[in-house]
Image (cartoon, rainbow, N blue to C red; front, side, top):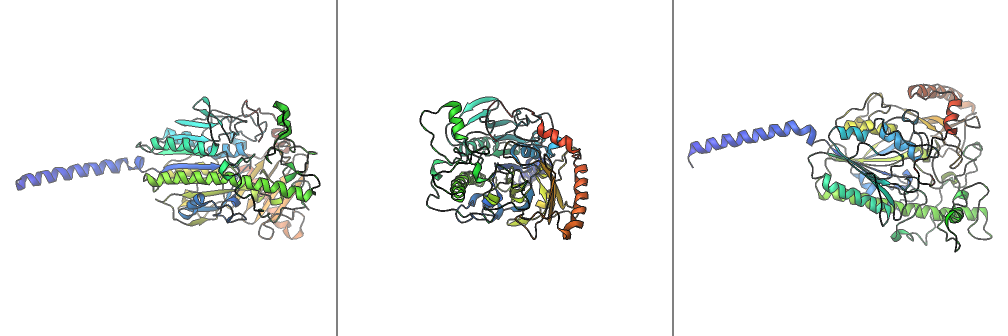
Length: 531
């Protein structure tokens, strides 16, 4: 080949390369937008993740979830604004408090209004492939998803075994264990979505470890010969909190026969069988597993069954988080994929003698939150900023190059995720819980938590204020509302609480709050089941 031809070809090749580079540069905002996998378990307590540290780290480690902390950021102070399944999920996808998104409670809470703005729909409109798998629990038909497959049975709580799903509007029953099945469906969708030029946003929302805590067969007897340790406050006497923490249906006494996996008498069917299984839910139904047991022996026996089944359910969640991470690793997707792991609120693992959630107390208020984003987030980093579940939506949008509309009440913490917390970042959060008396007889209350103190008002058929110094009383055993040394702090916090109620448009008279509690908004679906 002559020298002139070589020069001409070189110029042409350079021009082609330059053109390709220009095209890549122009399209970079689209193709370099991160993929997002939002993984949420149901009722997963922060203390049941070994990355956070707790009683069960060595007995029930969560190595795959822990990977997100080792390879990304662990958040210590993420809080739920209304600690119950449906309302929390509504706040997460809308970035708004219950009073603004209209979804206040599970029992008689009706259905989520699907016509309002949500972050998945916004992402879909902006070129993302979107999908949702697992627990939806909002009653309405999901919008803004190319594909969805959510639990339909048991009031949209779902079944652990042979679950009923709604697959893009069609009811289907699948054979197997729900946690594994939901992950299977998500991975099948990922295999297609990851081949597209478009980025993807997938919500993977496990039913586990929700009540009735049915483990996969291989984990049923995992700790059969071990007595699990009891939390420090297991035998709480509720002194100074008699009308609130001391007056609930959340102690071990209210675990029912189905929770305890007892075998019913032969011949029971239908309502009679359901009645037998649910015995223990109501006051006056406290039952003992074995004749002659003391109250304390009974509580401990029930706790051992409960905690082992709960942690065994989490084993399957952790396994399937590992499967998702492996898929990303094997297919070169890890670097530019944001993986979030969280729960819809916290949960009691015997603290204060409780199971369930609902209270503004730390165990139910705190949400686990871990994020891995290798392209941008420093591995092994830790964040202690006060963040709430209404902040998730604007953060995910900003990470994807979008901005939430003005109506969204949450604030993006994307800068915080990158290690650059704004100087004016929030140092307090607002909470409001509405449901009463069923389930669990927890008094409706609202409150404020800052970096050290917590103040709450329980208002439905009592008028009780509680105040805690979390530095001196981290277990919240002493209601210090009348302590002389805190009166100036309490007065200041009452003003701050009022300001937050105005800020979040929740400054109604108490009568209006009580009306919300009393209103029957309807069932989440036509299926019957507990919350």
